[in-house]
Image (cartoon, rainbow, N blue to C red):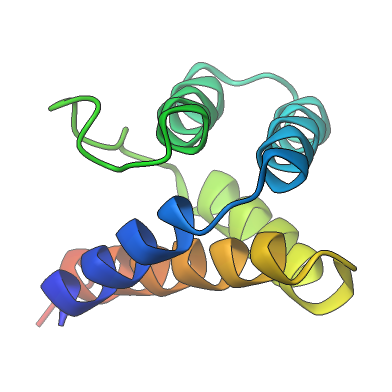
Length: 112
């Protein structure tokens, strides 16, 4: 399932318009500020920004940072809000793809 969601994120990132890329940069900065600038949130945002700016997801081999439950919840809430309220369809689709990956990470990291 993670591979399918990785492919979804790759398609969403590739579909971002120049206006969408600029908006992604804005919302990521807002999420970092709202999250208190925690190092793992900053790193998560940097990875997503690099992907959006490049228009592809293979720009780095760095793994996503390990998030605390509070950081995860904040990101999940933030990306849900973006998906549900963002007027730019490409940005809303990108946020939905990030949510799918976050859900995969939560499922993978939960005790079996």
